[in-house]
Image (cartoon, rainbow, N blue to C red; front, side):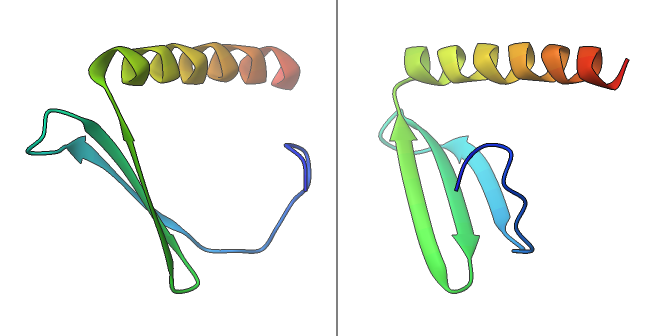
Length: 62
């Protein structure tokens, strides 16, 4: 499966701070739960990558 492979899977995502000072992305799909914890600096880097991908996607749509 790659970035351009479409799947018909419904998933839920939650994002928030933990009581340990981490940023958690919590994804649930098909009964599988995936918690991913990042320190704040890593979370900011991920946010920048998401913004850059959104900008690139806008350019593809034209």
